[in-house]
Length: 301
Image (cartoon, rainbow, N blue to C red; front, side, top):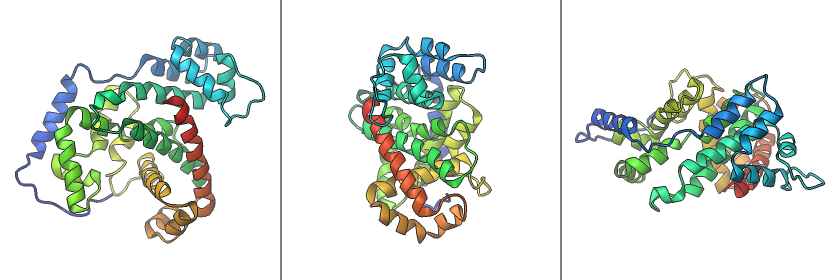
């Protein structure tokens, strides 16, 4: 995405703002850290020598998390004919990849409880957006019939994590960015670059680097709004960007209207081209994934 227009802010020392943000994020002692259970689940799932029993041992240490997983396995979405009453059976029904996604989602949501934002930010709405974008990103790769990076869900879930950091530690800057975006008709990312010299994607990537997440995730988060012109057509950052756009489009219009808008959108047509499903089939499939995600969120939150 290119910056649409330049707004002169001669009184703002952008280099100074960037340095201040980096300094605070390096020094803040209560900056969230990636929960141990999420790290352990990822380690077990990616260890070829690990078994389902090993995964059960990790998850059952967290009683609240285990209860949520059981509720999800018993939800109407999976349609299991009898009650699932043990964690191992629940994990088999849900599947390893989905369990990893669920554990990561729950663990990270706990890091930023609603109360930590002092009522200035709608945290449940934020996580709804993040979780649905994660589903949309996975669905886009499926519908476009493109190889999907293993980190797609997590990178998409965390794509806006920088907003939470800005709200919690740099709320004055964040409010200025929101006001400039409204006043000048800019996107939030564009106004952040004008005010701070960086956008929330780059701020978020500083946190995920601190969590020692893979470079693929850090780069996708940093570049999901503003990225080099030669970025891969179906690269993770680009897919997350389209998931973000589709979220707001599908939230505001009927399926039929969304299909009509996209079929007449030169940027969408150029990007999607002949890849995968038709636009109509793709959007209907993504709509199903959104409904599925909302069902999951209602259980997780």
